Amino acid sequence: AQNRLLIKNGKIVNEDEIVEEDVYIEDGVIKQLGRNLIIPGGTRVIDARGKLVIPGGIDPHTHFEFEFMGTKSVDDFYQGTKAAVAGGTTMIIDFVFVKKGESLIDAYYTYRQKADDKACCDYGLHMIVSYWSDRVREEMSILCSEHGINSFKMFMAYSFMLNDSELYKAFEACRKLGAVAMVHAENGSIVSQNTERLLAKGVTGPEGHELSRPEEVEAEAVNRACTIANQVDTPLYVVHVMSKSAASALVQARERGVRVIGETLAAALGTDGSQCKHPCFQHSAAHVLSPPLRSDPSTPRSLMISLAQNDLQLTGSDNCTFNKTQKELGINDFSKIPNGVNGVEDRMSVIWEKGVHSGILDPCRFVAITSTTAAKVFNVYPRKGCIAVGSDGDIVIWNPNRTRVISAKTHHQAVDFNIFEGMECHGVPEYVVVNGRVCVDEGLVKVVEGYGNFVKTPVFPPFVYDLENAEKLRPSNNGIDDLHQTPKGEDRKVSPT
Ligand code: DUC
Ligand code: ZN
Ligand code: ZN
Ligand code: ZN
Image (cartoon, rainbow, N blue to C red):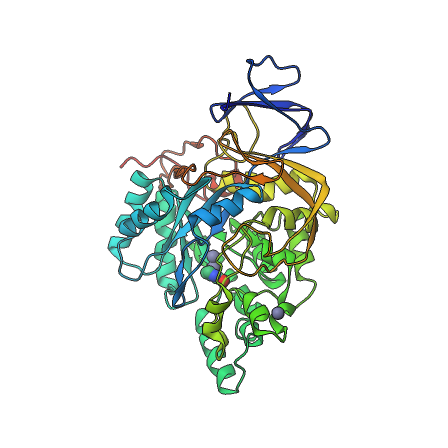
């Protein structure tokens, strides 16, 4: 029957080991692992001989239907999640944009409405904190306790950036709630000054984008965010680490005891800033995102090595796609080019190609940085992010011996450009199983609109100061021990409130 599936003869790759076992899934959940399983008649069998059976990818960073820079990103929750599944990603976490002054809870409901009937795979939500007030603090608490939100992103650039005092308060609120504080790290004030100066000099094309936001402007913000997080003793998640300078700022912060996670992007691993100097505006503008792709050509490989060494911990796509006509909003002024690139579909393939196929990552590390670590950080592990009895049936049968060539002509995204155009990738997701349903079947995409569920991401037990009663309480399922563990000089306790 449709709700039973046996994946036979494959090699299961989890972040910690590779085993030769079959997987039996029933009603969306993994029920048995092993060889020679006894299973009911009528079960569909897929032969995975010679292939890898890996946990579905988790993309912790997408912006579907994102209203931004005077326009709206074109991949919505249907086409975005369809593309995700086509590429081997079975869960995404999108960012709820909150306009200045708007209620966070209203914005949350708006996103649930946009997504619930469209998502083809499970999804979670992060909130963007775009301004600060006491009401924001209260709403953060309600979102955590009642709505399954456990992560808040603050921007240090753009018109909705927070200043250092506001970051301090927002990070502190996250610490008290047991939520994950996330940050877009670029010094927005320097970016504005540089932009004015460049435009005044007549530098108006896409090549001005990186000039206005150089590496040290990213690294400075990374360092400052780490410092602020350390002052309030909260773990920090830095989204889209795009440069060698920013990656080393993270490493240095960690050396002085800051607990910080670094995410990098498929875009940063698969292409580079030389594309923004292409003579054709449509081509160069299509590669504009912030922080920028770097013109130092050693960047992609260096970031991949950082992932291998655990200097960076995981990957997302930052999928925020604009068509060529939308990018033309910035034809006379690079600072008006809507920022964002594709990646939700191709992230797994690009990272396999540049990471595993090129010999920098082993398959277990691939699984960690594309799936498991995201599940742990956002507290949905081991339901997601691993192949284990009791976990959701989110599985990819990955054929490392086949290749495909990435192209906008064949991708499943709404956007009319692909920054990885022409890249040949070893490693093809031949079958993608989403909650037990075969949604990519021998390479054919067979998703169902609205099939995906909203997944609540529970907070970690919050930190409270309790110096007298120094008993240590460990949260369950807390894989990311070194980050969410007892903070320095105090113990982690469930808040008595
Ligand atoms: N950067 C982008 O390039 N797009 C969306 C938001 C962001 O921070
Ligand atoms: Zn960002
Ligand atoms: Zn071109
Ligand atoms: Zn983003």
